Amino acid sequence: MLKVITVFHLFFIILFANNSTLIINNKIPIYDDFEISYIKDYSKNLTIEDIEKKEFNNFIKNGFSLGYSNNTTWIKIDILNKSDKENFILTLNETFYEKANLYYKKDGKWIKKENGLLTYIDKREVSYNKLSFIFDLIQNESSTIYLEIYGKYSYFGKIIIYDDTYFKQKNFFDSNNFYIFILGITSVILFFTIGLCLTLKEKIYYYYAGYIFFNIIFLIKISGILTYLDLQKYIYVLNMSGAYLGAFLILFSIEYLEIKTYLKKYYSALRLSSLLYFFIGFMFFFQYEPWNRILNSASLLISLVLLPLSIYIYYKGNKKSIYYTFAQVIFFIFAILFILMIAGILEYNNYTRYGIAIGSTLENLIFLILIIKRYDDLKESQLKAQNELLTIKNSQEEILKKEVETRTKELIIANNRLSDLVEERELLLKEILHRVKNNFHMIIGMLWFEEQKHKDTNIFSDLTNRLKSMSKIHEYLLKDSSNIKDIDVRSYFKEVIQTIVDTYTNKKVNIIYSIPDLQIKFDNAISLTIIINEIVNNCIKHNDNLDNIKIFITLEKNDEIVHLQIRDKGKGFDIKQIKEGLGLKLIKDYAKKLKNSTYNFSIDEGMLFNLEYKEEIWNINF
Image (cartoon, one colour):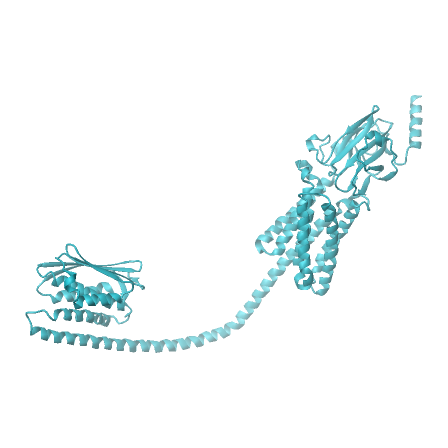
């Protein structure tokens, strides 16, 4: 009898149930296609007791899109549980509602379960980034469930009811897996693009890398993955990614479509529009609305501008823009579907909700192919240029070879002529040197004859030594006339000084040298010869009372500074006594010929003479 009453009771419930009532049975573990009803609470103050008394006259599919609205929306779901289960899970299938509360009656009392965007994942009844609830339904009875939702974004979503056992065991491809797949593809594109940036360092690759980077941020924002990281509080700020990827898309399009070449008058306007997008993105750090709606309108507008521009540029001659147009058409279609859905014009389904992610990924892949093709074109252009250069090189080789042969013959003739001139110059130089040396010797011989008439005096000895010192340079050059620019001072000075010493046959003179192997200019060598001659002569003459006269001669060089030092171990001489003599005058005059020269005399246990000057050309022989 009880079974009969129960059957009749269910029959009358089904018979008089509203058409929007969801009937749950044992055959289906998931319910994702049914009707719901809703009302909008513009006061935002209605309680569940108030709502229970309201008439819900607006019926829609459980995949709903209600557009933008600054209110609280209440959704009503009538359910008849004909299954043998009582525990179920309801998901809103979206993450962005700041408030999502579930109400249902149990034992005559309202049960309220709170959830929302800012509720951390570990505080939720169902550890799921989609807003979800656990609720009970009494078997063989009708129940009414209310959802109270509020958010800053457009009102859309899909309410799905699961058998709780099925929900816990389910292993199917949901939106999280979809977004993870899309993010993986986009991340690979980003890494590849960064490689191109580092390799080619062109603006277009940097713009595309920026576009892909903010595309990833945008996908992270709309996917709800932030909830698993407890970072959902940043979802409004991250909406700036939509503005920034729009800015980088404009900059990328300017470069790829060569706007400056084909549509110069639009170039400045498009660059300015990219700055406006950057500004909109910056404003998201301070305020979400109205900038979100402004961004949605601006995104639609820029698509409507770039698409016809790319078509126009194609007909202007930039044939590669056809691929850009194709990518934009794909994205534009899905973007329009998404915008119409969030505006409440189209219904919520997989195409309108997730199509924009698919369109964006397809656009990214096509753009990637475009920049790879651009890279290949660049390489092909470089290879073509190299081949042209190689052709030019090959065509010019024969001409160059003939020119080299001609020039070589001319150089050989010129070299032979120069060799003859060098030989003539050497012969002439030797003849001049020989004649000058003979003249010096003739004068020295004449002075010797005169000196024999005055054997008791040495009136000609100083003059004779000066002439001998000057003649030595010519004798030195006669030995090697190949280099008259630089003089090997070590051997040359020794010969000069020994000639001076040999003049004083009645005295024992010991010269101690410290002269390195080096060369100095010809003019400087003559000046030093005169100076050394005068100093050494004075050292010998003013120490005639010594049996053994020691004279130390040192020549040094530090960097470009030459230092000459001559000292003896005698009694020295009074510089004041000879300051009017010819010798000191010669020292003074020839020292002036040396660059930046300074010299001084001092008397301390003998005479000390120091001379410094700058030798610009200095060669040391090792």
